[in-house]
Length: 109
Image (cartoon, rainbow, N blue to C red; front, side, top):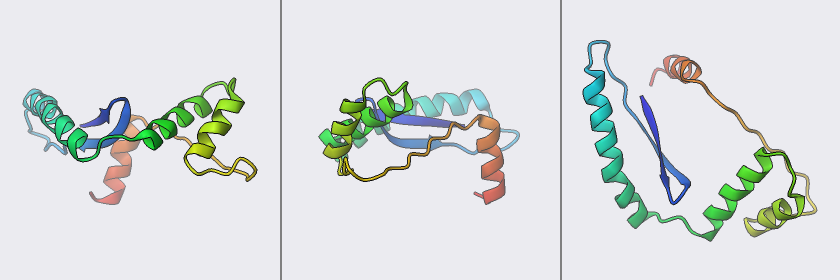
């Protein structure tokens, strides 16, 4: 069970519960929702996203899209420290719950 916490649209943390087989899943979901509600203001206060965070988030969003805005992508890259004249490799992955569960099992977390 995991929930991504975002602050002003920027991913800030991931909250993960590892319930036992006999755990009350409904109770854990309620606890997870309440925990997220409590953590968001704390994260906002101690690690509020800055302009660079917003630029990086927008850069990833545009780069993962159809590539229709190459000039904007270039400007955002420069604003977060990527040189416009240098080659860049980007890697993106989308994981399903089954893949995440398998990865966690393999890592003994």
